[in-house]
Image 1 (cartoon, chains in turn yellow, red):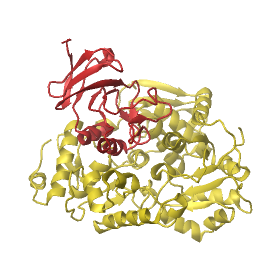
Image 2 (cartoon, chains in turn red, blue; image 1 turned 135 degrees about the horizontal axis):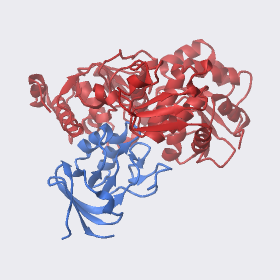
Image 3 (tube, chains in turn purple, cyan; image 1 turned 180 degrees about the vertical axis):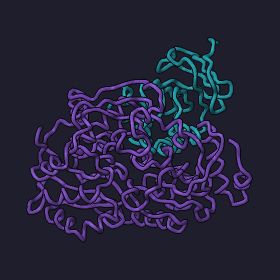
Image 4 (tube, chains in turn yellow, purple; image 1 turned 30 degrees about the horizontal axis):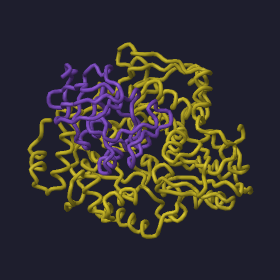
Length: 428
Length: 134
C-alpha cells in the first residue's frame, strides 16, 4: 500500500497512538485486499456501543478501554481524539429508553449510556439504526464511504450508487479516526459490474416477494454482482419501493454475500443489462421461477415446527413509516393474543414521527410495542419464554434462529400481525 | 515428513492444529458462537462443529459485517482458529485476518485435507503440511 506523506505522519504517531493504530490496521487490511493506496472518506458508519457481551470479556465497562480493545484492536487503553471523518453509529445493543423490556439490568443500561456518550464526545451521529439512509445519512452518487452493516452496504452501493466495501467494526473505527479507507473492491468500477444474470420469470410484486427473491439470489450468486431482468419484474404494480429494495438487499446479504446488484431502470449505474455486464457475457445465468419461489419460501420457515407463536418481530432492517402504518392499521381496535408479544423496530427519528401520527398509540393500545436503536438479533434478547417467533424479514428469519435458538416463521406483515392477534401461525 | 501443499502465504507465521474443513463459506456474526467457537448457522454443512483451536479450512467468509467483530470476540475468549486456509478473499475475511493475526495461506489444493487431520500451516512459506491423517 502506497502511503501519502499525511498517511505516513499518522502512522508514525504524529496524531497520537489511536490514529497510528488505526492507520496501521487500514494498511494491513488494505494489503490483504490488494489495495494500492488509501483514499479519503468522509462518511463512515460503524458500531461502537458496547454492552455486557463485550464488557464481560474484558472485565470492565470503561468505554475508553472497550473502544481501544475492540474497535482499535489494541492491547491497552489509549487516548482517542475527536473523529476526523463524519461518523455515524449504526444499530446497537439496547433501546435507549425501553431497555427494561429487553431484560437489561440498570447497571448494564448505565454502562451502555456511558459507551454512547463516549461516542457523542468524539463527534459521532447517534442515528443508532441499521438504516441510516432512512433518517438523513444519504450518501451522494459516487461518494466513497466506509460502512458496516451488510444490509446498508448493499443499499447504498446498489440503490444510491455510493461506493463502499462491507467494513467491520475495526476498519470502520479506523476510518472514523483517519478519514481514510483502502482503495479496493467496490470503490473501483471494475468490481461493480455485474457478472451473473438473474432472469426473473415468476412475478415479484409484494414486499414478501422481494424478501424471497433476495434470499434466493443470495444463495445462487453468493458474493458475485447480479443483474436482474425478466418478465417477473415488468408488472407495473411491481415497482420496487425503497422498502422492497431494503428487504431485498438485506435478504440477499444474509443467504449470500451480495454487496452490489443492478436492476436496470431502477438502480442508477446501468440502464440496460448489457451496460450492467460491461459488455461481457455473464459467468452464469439463473432463473427464478415458481418452483424457486416455493422452495425459498419453505426454506425460510425451515426452523419452524410449532404453530403457536410467542413473538412477532416487524422491522428488519428497521421499519419505514409505511411498514409501521400497516401494522397500526391491522391492529387498530384489536388485541394481540395474551400469549404473544408484538414488537416493531424502527429508527428513533421515525418513531418520533410514528408517535405524532398516532401509530405508536394504536400499536400500544393493541398490546404491541415500538422499539428503536436495536433489534433482537443485535441485542440478543427476546420476550421472556419465546420459543417460536414470526417475522416479515427474510434476514431476521435467517439469523435469529441461529443466534437465539428459536423457531422462526416468515411471511408478510399481514400474516405476521394475524399471528400476533391469534397467537398462531395461520398456515401451520 | 510428507510433501507440503504449496500455495501463497498471506499472513506470516506458523501454527499447527487439527483441521476443520468447511464446505461452505462461514458467517461470523450469526455464524459462530464466540463463547464456544461452535458454528451455529442452522443450514451450514458443518453446523455444530467448533472452530476453536483448529486450522480452519474454508472457501471464504460471508454474511454480516460483524465477521471480524465476532472472530475478534472469539480471539479474546480463546475460541479462535490457530490458522486459516482459504480459497476466496473478500473484505470480511481480509479484516478478520488482520484482526485475528494468525497464519493464513491461500491458493493451494486443499481438497486433500480432511477434518481431523493434524496439519502444519506456514504462512511465511505459503505451505500446508498434513502431518498425520485424522
